[in-house]
Length: 563
Image (cartoon, rainbow, N blue to C red; front, side):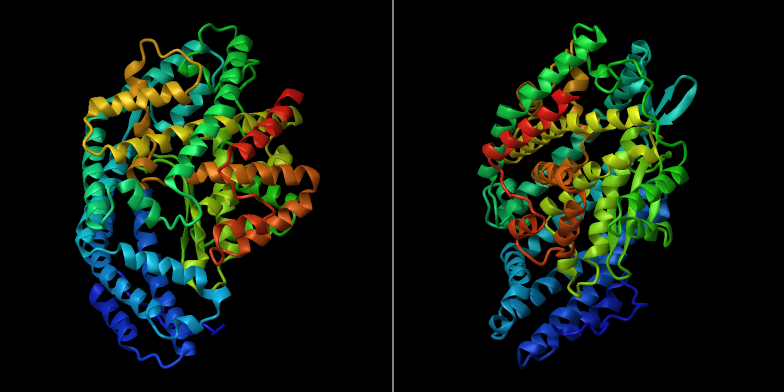
């Protein structure tokens, strides 16, 4: 393997296309006389792309940290409008220069087959006509983030963010839960039409992109664009069916058990987060600093170098954890690819789900850290189906170490809650993915038809709860799923990854140290090998089959019954 030479200057201003262009032009003009020179071109291109990637990362991070900062928004939009669109044709020409080179076949196959396969797909799908459409989509997604980010609720004499309101849904006083739930959804519904307008425009733009690339619909285009070499839309629908067969009955049985324990008939949407035994909500921390310190102790207790990796996040502006007004929703980990430093973003409000989010995003950070030394930018990222194994496995692997936050009884509650989330996660994933299949294979639908399709899926996959009098909130529930807006079709990956995470949990129950060794071994490959091989390296089966779903459902259910 040729050694990287830091082709890109460390002070390169990637916000300015005029500064970037000569460096890319140099790569395009460089003569290639043999396989070694082609390999060096690939490495130099990777180094330059990493500078651009980090610039984009920092601009995006800044917009999510404060959606109301107009200066930050202007800088982000300037990159989206003036830099990124000009780089895409150059990137396509470089893809062609590499893949069409007579020396491409002489590159070591085991090292470059995954990269070359991916570049060929990028060439296949590139259409200059789609560049302005992608730019407009990025701008519209920013509007969605701003709309969600400014949602605040006046409740009990204080103005609170949506994540902060979630605390009240765990209160044992049912009247408080209902009042909070109604306040949250009343606020969301104020922007229902505005969010529908955003989504309508996104659907139209995406359908046009698919047509431009020669696809009948955006679903098929996006599956190809995501380089899904190992499964098809039909396989996704098979997975929907297996979730309906094996996990919907489990979820609804748990709902009935919840209603019985709470002595409530019927179960309502505000009854799903409260402890059924009337115990106080799990409150693992009060401040973000306590969350970080507790996680550090927890990961050190796990061993296998997890604590040392986590502690590297304490410096270098790697964490933004508190919930506040104007902050974008959700949580994410974003790798800054030139400095190779992870960044974790979330909206912590002192709830148990915040601890889950923290260890989830830490799993992504571990993935970034373990694969950061690969000189190829493409290989420092992995297929999302496996990237989410890194994060969702960590939710389960950390459970034996929650004593850093909880008492013994609370640790048992946390374990049961995570296992109960298996059917909950999977049924919601099936709902969202099936919704997108319908949306983009019926792009001319009306809003009323969209609502009917959503209701049908809620009937197929939803909880055993009564929505009487709350139908409007039910019908608009999809609007809170940010992936539908900014990352279309990036959701089935969570379901595939959850099957891997449950398998990793099963491994850990047999041999924790071996499971962690397999975890590290798989993550260290980054994206350098095909998806089934990444799973296999971690000791996992890559399947979307009914048989695997049935097996995992039995294993989880056995543990739930035992507890």
